[in-house]
Image 1: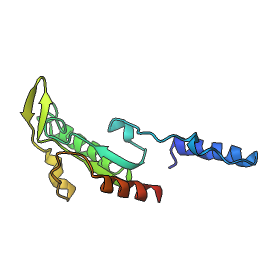
Image 2 (image 1 turned 180 degrees about the vertical axis):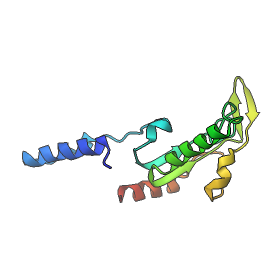
Image 3 (image 1 turned 90 degrees about the vertical axis):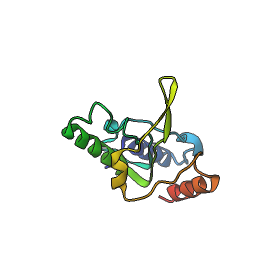
Length: 140
């Protein structure tokens, strides 16, 4: 399935081809699209980031007493992860500032099912790792 933006880009490029010109390089500016897990259904992206994979967030205290809602949270995480065409970054915080206080956090129960270990970081990606992801994304 082609998303709306890809269809728009194809249409604009087709118009420029018909008039015998090339579209300017900056006609499609780089951007980051932020959406909810529910909003990601049916879409895809080169890189997907799922922050906050902590027990207090996903599944969260309101879902915990209800097994069906916990399973729904797991399905929404699955949908989010499978939207990625190149890379998916999943993270959780061991401490989080909530309501004016720093509180210890527990990784979500879903992290055990992801099949890979987490790297402990006090900062984001290195420049080298980010450059490698950009290079691979441009090759798609």
